[in-house]
Figure 1 (cartoon, rainbow, N blue to C red):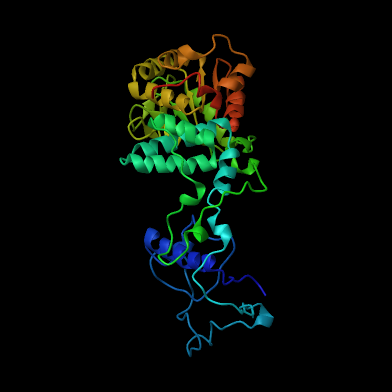
Figure 2 (figure 1 turned 45 degrees about the horizontal axis):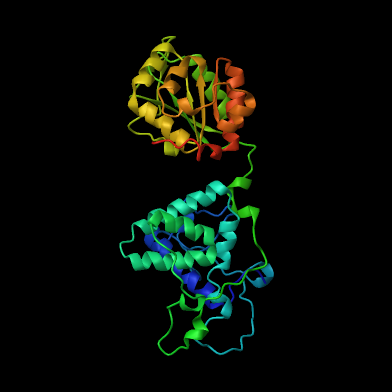
Amino acid sequence: PGIDFTNDPLLQGRLFSYTDTQLIRLGGPNFHEIPINRPVVPVHNNQRDGYMRQTINRGKTSYGPNGIANQDPQQVKAADGGFVSYNERIDAKKIRARSRSFFDHFSQARLFFNSQSDPEKNHIIDALSFELGKVKAVEIRERMLAVLAQIDKGLAAEVAYALGLHIPEIALEDLNNSIPADADRADYASENPEGSLAKSDALSMAGTVKDTIKTRKIAILAADGVDEKAISTVKTALVAEGAIVHIIAPKLGEIISKGDQKIVPDESFLTAASVLYDAVYVAGGANSVATLEAEANAVHFLNEAFKHCKAIAADNEAIQVLESTYFHKKLPAEYSKETVLREGVIVSGDLKELTSTFIEMIALHRFWERENPRKIPA
């Protein structure tokens, strides 16, 4: 019979809500045609015109019957593959009520939190501490701590410490105050079953496939006097692996390499930020290195990339730039490949070795080991 919608009230509400949201958020009826939303399979219907229309239709009519297009378009019979709504028997009472499963307010949140790696849990704790720290009413903060305690007591304790509060004792059945005027409170009490699934690796980014750098954005920091061979070698290798590479310089326009070649930067330090990139490479070239070392925005770019646990590579000649950063003094003095892949920072004079290791580092995505012992003010 094909795919159709059930009469589930939650689904029916979402069918309206999602369409309404897209209309308002994207501003027109053809939101399903813009490239980011477009289906991967062809869609043929009788819709035409309107804001954001991408399809170019042939013919004068979008309706039938008609006398000017040989009756096209026409409806399609079920025997020819046309859609027919499923003839479903419905026998029920329409009531304003919810099944008891709707009052399980915590098991999915607990599953999600328990499935995270330690760095991800710390990020969630920091995010909740920040958001609740913006709440001015202390009683609301305390109530939210009681809610978090139903998810994970350790989570609630960490957030409570950040807020300078104690976790209040609120009974589970008293947490839900969204109760209809004529309803029995007991019928709307929150439930907190343990659930059959305690953890799922699919919910954590720690289990992400780490064997490709496709679609990763890489920043190359450069200035006048940069080593064009280094830029060309590294950029070519990264692009060949499917990465997106941007050259970032102190200014837009052109920079002149040490071999007098003109290089056009993609961004300047004023128009780019490290948070938009997955990794950073600092190319060699004495004049370029001297400029970047004195460029506060370049140093901040590197400090911020390190703080966010991203891969960083530099030519031997560019070590001065790294020495200007806050994090350089916190790195181990001696490097082996094992150290590089743990710390996510490589400095090498061998372009071939640097490039292959850098690609391997980018594929690992982030180096969370930095977060606890090496916090960076960036």
